[in-house]
Length: 263
Length: 326
Image (cartoon, rainbow over all chains, first blue to last red; front, side):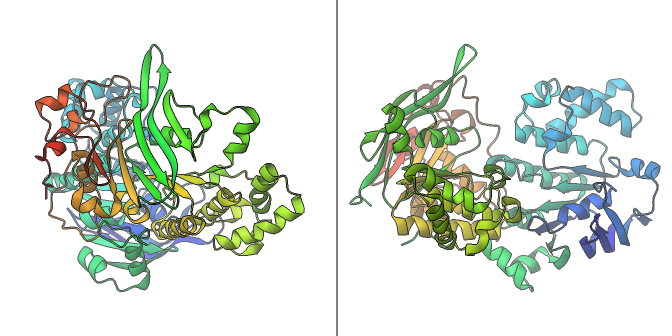
């Protein structure tokens, strides 16, 4: 469905932040991109929707989405794709929500932008989505301002809002990094359900190997702007080829692992 | 562990903050002790009061009631010069290395400051010592001439540790000291901390939320929920012996790299209740899957289950909740 071919992206200084990266996602598949900070994983998925920060430019390569090259489409057409066919959720959803609008209004806007629906169908649609996101007392959430919600709730409201137009592809940029472990588990559970129920394909950028391992069909490992390893989840987790992947896996603290404090 | 010298004694510490006309119970009735050379891990979700506790331990907040004694001295009662002199005995390492450094101060100046400030030694001598400090934390000695922005997050965290240990404190509080770092760096810093604490024989409180990391770093783990310690046990026994449903839920929420993808996640529904209106009974009752009638009525006290293993749960004490959900 999405096919990134030999993509190179640079910022103002001319040094590539992403160099010669290829990646493909099929329908209903979850692909994770893992790597250290600064390895270019966020740059890569931002480029898909043309949301690179100022100065960022795709120098070469193609990003094909259902046969259309996203690096060549105009802004007008891109607007059409954003949200409706490819949605994105960010690490800090709190900053993405409007602080002076109730959640209800923000849903209204995001529905109105993407679809032609009679006004009175907005609220049921949003409520339905929130309920699917396992948000208890969704009525209260609808009438709340963002600051009244906790981090985990905001993240789930954000995912629900991203999913409102039933996009085929969801780009998730570190959606669980700022959350507590128990809330992280809820969000991870949610994403898995999205895929299972709607067949949404997800590209997940994360530095949490455990989450990537639990959710993904395929995993890509990025290091210093390059994709050093890309393969099925079992291949990358159990039989990594690259030394870097092995090191990365070895560095993750494990519950049953060795303890430093043992004396 | 029992024979070691007890360094820090915390007993029945409470901290409440006034919020409008209500009281916010940030920390309630916490007691524990810390020996020399021991690392105590404190885990809990955000808002459970672990940072408030940390700030009380280093003396920047005064407990509402209860006592904290270091080497037998209740330092919250000290005043003026005495208090200032006592402060050098506890040091802290913070979460975000870059924001805890002044961008205009060179690493050397930063490292020399505690010695100049507390020991009043001449600047020249203090600067000479910085090289040794840098080597202690595994950094090249010529780093003293650099500015913080020239260092990576992991290197900065090493410098922060060096500064904290420069004046030989009695104990160290690490508030999510590895939280902002990449996994590979995180491990190195954790290993360094353990090594230095053993070498210098000081006590350490290590605060975090990653149970897997905490288990590997600490000797004992205290699990906090809504201002209270709900379980305290040896890190080694964490997996096999933990009995509190909250500890088990936390363990269930850790994603192992080698997990089974088809395994259902044990979900803890909802969020921790607000510390403003703490209900009667067990604070975890609303989210607990095993909650019984008595849990809602009576607050469980932290009781010793077996040697060195304390738990605050009605069901655990009765033995009925002992089995771990698999």
